[in-house]
Each structure stands twice: as C-alpha cells, then as structure tokens.
Length: 260
Image 1 (tube, rainbow, N blue to C red):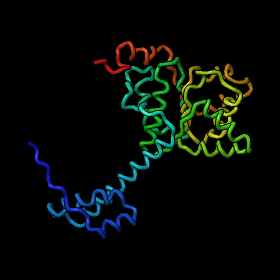
Image 2: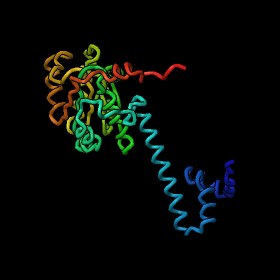
Image 3: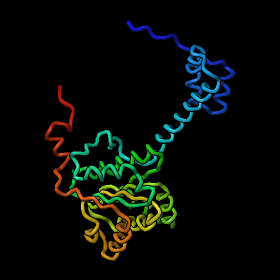
C-alpha cells in the first residue's frame, strides 16, 4: 500500500492575496510545496526564489504556447508525435533541416506538392505546431478561408489592412491548394497574401499540383505573378511516387480503434 506524503501547509492568507494581486498564478500554485521542500532540505533563500520564478516563467511560456496554438487555427493532432519519417517521400535529411526552423528566420517558402494522402498537410501542419512550440506565431488557412477573408473586408475597403495583419505571423500555412476548384476571390486572395509576404514572412503551402501548374487554377497572368514571387526563395518538395499514407494506415487497420 502506497502512503501519500502529507499535504504541505497552505500559504498564509496575506501571501496568497499578494500573489493574486501581483498576478503570479504559477508561483501561487507551487509555493506551498516548494516552501515545504525548502524547509525540509534547508535550501538557500536564493534557491527558493529561483525555483519559484522558474515555475512562473515555465507556466507563462506554456500559457503563451496554448494561446498561440488556439489562435493559429491549426488542426489538432497533426504533429511530429504522430509523424513517421520513414513513410514519407521527403528525404530524412531534408525533414531534419526543415525542423530546425531556420528557413522561417530567413523568410523562405516551403511548398510540398503531390497526390492526396501522401502526408503533405501533416508535414506542413506539424511544422506549424513545432514553430509555435519554439516561440513563433503561426496562422493556418485554406484558399476558401482566404477567399472568405477577402470578401469580408472588401465591403469596407480594408483588404490590404487585413492581409497585413495576417502576415504578422512568423509562418503562414496555406493548406490543400488545388484540391478544390479555385474561385476568383480565392485566386486573388492567394496572390495578395504571397505578394504581401514576399521576402518578409515565411509561407508553408501544401498543394496537389506543382506551382508551375497554377495557371490551371487561376488566370495565367495572375498565376505567373503569384508563382514568380512564391518560388523565388522556396524549397519545393515533391511527394509523387508515394503511396497514400491514409490508405496504407486504413489497410493496416491503423485508421480506427479495434472493435471490442
């Protein structure tokens, strides 16, 4: 039978009130246990202060990450925890190089193109989650959500302002380009975003077609201007020749929980 250690004595009411007033929630949460440990192990006062401040800093960092993840709009679950590097057509050294996130610091572009089900979305979205974990801001969109943003702000002539706000993020992820027919609003929005982000912010795009084929999605003149800016500082990865990752998982019975 496991005997639980006794709970540490609660903080004095005055100290509890001061920590609330100073908005130090993580110090308040940890203080009773830290002080009890400090007393039993005879810590130096500076060590007590260091541990409590580390608790506050770590708590605030985690809260910031949680807030940024929620604000990003990234789909949950598509992280590197569930990623299988060996199943991807992307060379492992390239995967590792991209996971350093140095390309984001250089305002470069990543385009991952290939057939449906080959892990494009998972990879770019996992990079987005990794960027948030490393203190960066991320925004996730599809062409449909970009078109909606364009229409919403066209009425009061604030499109440029809205796109400027959008590209304040360190990384903008645009998912599933070419999966559905592209409306004129979506084509215009894609150009506007790429033009505004050019040499200022990083983009990560997953696409069913190579950017050279974007003239199938939008007017040729607009496609040429879009691709010119997109590919100038871009890493282009092609997943052609890879079997559908989703289909392989389904065939192996990994897409669902076993029935009992």
